[in-house]
Length: 307
Ligand SMILES: [Zn+2]
Image 1 (cartoon, rainbow, N blue to C red):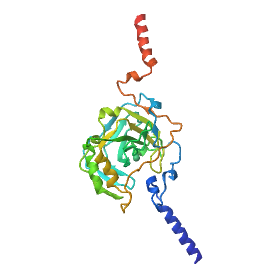
Image 2 (tube, helix red, strand yellow):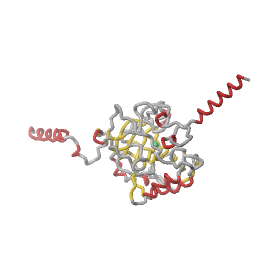
Image 3 (cartoon, rainbow, N blue to C red):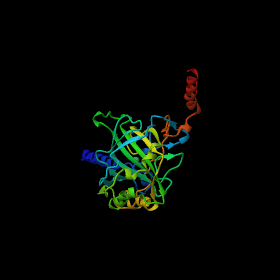
Image 4 (cartoon, helix red, strand yellow):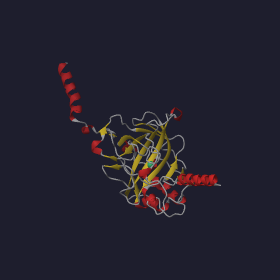
């Protein structure tokens, strides 16, 4: 009988570990919560090239290779499937949507987009810019092509485009199909189909997308693998107050609808020995250091003098 009891005890122990799932701080603070808070997240989460980070714009180095992106299929209109995946709201993006350029080493295929948010308009973004958090942050996750060549754990396997979301006065029509879908996916593991829409309509104007920051980091959820080329755009998306509030009121973390989904934000991570780069937008000649401007000018002058 005793070995049987021992086995039973083992089985119970194994069962309880399996049930322990990672969660955000707001969930870990709930009474009787039995989930793993960000400070204890497993996998690579405790390594030192993690995301999100604060972007100190005064320390970001201009990299002239950070040219504009080529967006393919972003203007495609489709009825996207959207799910409540227990941690966020996720739009599943199909084939034919990809990005290239922007100093990426290959073409990257879009897989999904999701958001992070709070109820307050100044703490829902994961990244912060000069210490400032935004209302929300949207991540469009892309995988390197061709996936057959994928080297397990390579630093550039994933490219995430991150957009800050600000609360403004006007209704953002491009976001409306997603906002309207939220009430159909209130509880975890439910899904629905959005009204026809395109990715491009959810983003800021294309001309504004030439300004961005770049650094090497990780996924912001377990296992936090350090395989992400991050692009954080300077121009925010704008939603109005009602659209913004829908996320924290319509969606729940749990089946019982006890805890509204909000503050699904990983705390900031140390930059460590990494460098953040920034793109140089066309026409920003004057932001170049003076010698860079003077040397070609002087060379021209000397050349014409010698002729
Ligand atoms: Zn994310």
